[in-house]
Image (cartoon, one colour):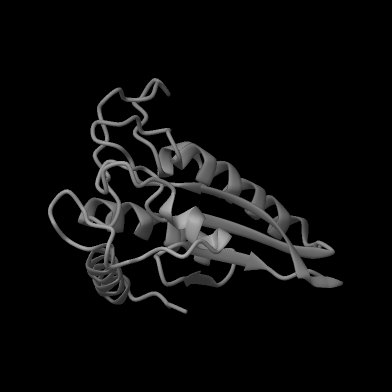
Length: 176
């Protein structure tokens, strides 16, 4: 069973540590934090990653696999952001998933826990919610969206996925 201390900085008195978080999308800090979530999610089911870098765990439905209930949030941050913005929503979705699995019951429809990639706009200056827009079906030009460092979204995603796969291989757990 996971708890808040597994994913957030909490001091010995159960008080949140107040320090800024810098976990811009598709950076090494983003990889390292998502790796913690992947490890936890894989205890509950298969984790997949899509073209833009969204992570998804699906609990299959019993009767209507064409329908899904989706709980999603993000783990990336703005510069000097708060540690609970986004990740607390991921934690809530994870705990719901954990409860469903522990119940031993299967929902009538699919249940999906999704960690959206690149929801905060800091790195791509005003281009927010890219992971959820991709899920919605928006046509994103991965080559025309440029980071403040001058790198295309496509290049940022490729770096992120390569680093994530290296970390996964190093940790020796499965990928899908």
